[in-house]
Image (cartoon, rainbow, N blue to C red; front, side, top):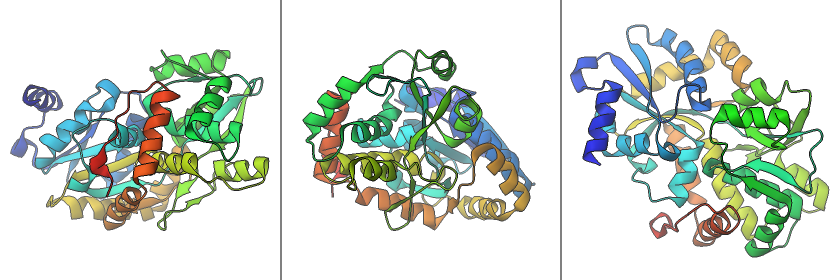
Length: 350
């Protein structure tokens, strides 16, 4: 681990006081990824509110986007000029993989309260869906299982139903290859973050919106997305099946979608970082600036910001969703239905 951390520090060009007025925003993905694109959009606007500083984006990809986040936990966060850009896949991994990082040790600079939008081809056979597999897509798979299979089923029954109706296809980790496969019809359902959906699925004449996951509220509920009204999974479920979703599968789905979506695009520093207030204030100014709002909304959509202590509270709300049953059922569905090696982390259950 020490060698990995040293490698990351060297690669990112982070060396303590050498960049005292330079903030390095670490993205745990490749250039061109959804998180990279979002960060580029935001930093362009945020820079105007930190004119005396330099904001740099540094990509450090790794397996399932975990190594850089582990390195932030173990070493990088102690540099007061380093900002971690976490995404939803990190939230999913936190719940079901043996990772080092712990959001409780971090301080929120801010997060965009985002959503994931699921699209389908117009010619899709909804009895035989073809969907690209990836660990960050667990909430989408669970949402599909609920919509396709209806209420009042056990996790085993949802697993069987999912396997009957969804071909969970590996081998499309690259975003470009996956998007091309969807465009060609080799994949019949795909999902994107709001910025990528506006760019890749929304303009596709052969595709349409299927559902989205809703937007987490401060009280722990989920609201419909004003950018895509009427397509929240819960709304479509009740419309189709006559009852609101509930039960063990829904609780596990709510847990994982909330971690994935509300932490989908977030800025973090180490707890106690002396630069935190400066960064939070700049982000707050940016979030209220009409020019910045217009520029970001044009590419991402109209989504609100949760900044500073409100971001810490959002994290604490997410932790309250973790129960023994919801976590165990998430792990079971991931292992049995999706063939994703997931581990039950008892330490997360309070």
